Length: 333
Figure 1 (cartoon, one colour):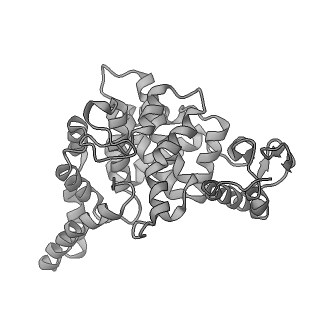
Figure 2: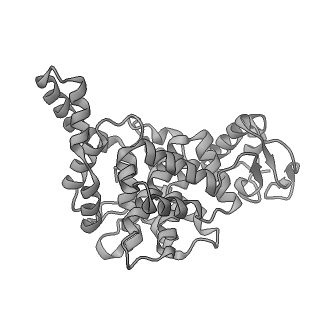
Figure 3: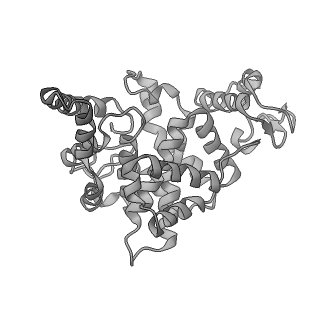
């Protein structure tokens, strides 16, 4: 019996928490690395098993050995994507009602989901919903960016959807405090943050359903054109086309996380101030869809009788932007 690596504790804890919300059972017996059975087939996985699981180095990844009663599927992904386009005006413009929305939804519904990957997305949806929603938003932006008829193929759209949906799957396996924007990271937590693209890559490349272009894009999603990204400080042409798409898509998606004020204004400013980081053609396409004036008008409804207050609100948004970017893991290299 050996101690499990610390990096495993966060995902194991999330899995046992999922077991408190819905039925999660061992789909097969779980053994440790020395062949000792740790959990019987059919056993319910919940917080009561956390300590037992953490006392052992398992012979196979936990996600390979468990199933949930209400797992993420193509249909549930489609429903989530549809709700995002209905509720967030920016995403509604990416996929207006009709053939364009139908295409986006169909592509995201048909992303290959091996059981282990579907289970991890289920953990994200039910235990770490901020990760899950960001993944779906990223996939939608990526599909839209790649969809440039007549040169695009359905295969290209599918690769963009898969890379967008899975690029941050590794965040399920790191300390949840990394998702708290105001949290000051220690050295170990910063190591986890900087290595999460490699962890995501490892989790995705285990499955033959995902082509090498998807795996590469996942590994590059935090690489910037000017070389300021991580984990390999790639720059320029060293970053693949799909890698550039996912890099920009996840930034766009992060701007629309719940609680962000004036997301379209912030996105517009971000892309203009950081033109050296992102593919210029892709950024230009996003900017054609951004309507920052809507954020101002929204504030104006409240401050209609106070024009000075409205100007102060706009100034506060712009002043806060650098602070948001400096503290947001999705934005900071």
